Image (cartoon, one colour):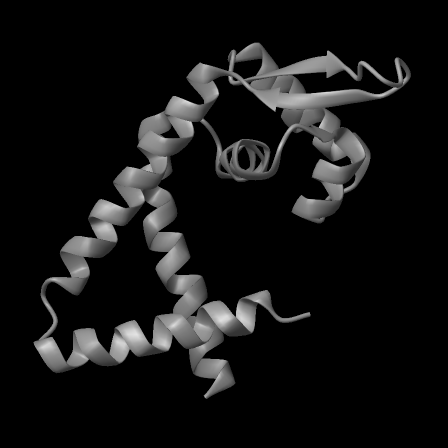
Length: 135
């Protein structure tokens, strides 16, 4: 069962990620942007840890996001040696639009299920959410 869930999750996310092309931003950048929008502002190190990439990789990702006007770097007011990454209003809009496209696609797929399957899927989603949040 764990193998089935793993496989289904990967295939589902790959299919939904195709919607990200409409944003004009790579999946890696959208993922980092998501962390910044929902948990930011963050240091590059904290963002790299959240995305499970090395700091140089995150620096490259953030540079691209910054060039696109989706994030900006800010010097920490309490410690001038620390830089934090914050989403811009444009970045927040781009992220939410990308998420809406993914959710719309998933909704169209779920709408084709019969009511009992939707009920089971809803229960499974709640269980998966609990599993995902456990250490």
